[in-house]
Image (cartoon, rainbow, N blue to C red; front, side):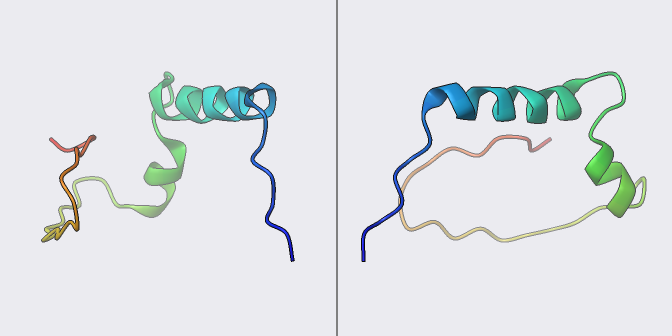
Length: 58
């Protein structure tokens, strides 16, 4: 059984641009607004197997 070949950049870029426009556009992140009540707070403990970076926290 062979693996699935990665998508070419030509197909990936428009998908990423659309996702960023949704999250960063004037309407905000509509998916989050639809499923998480305004003012909701959460707490988590992250355990990483290797050093890395985290974004979107604040």
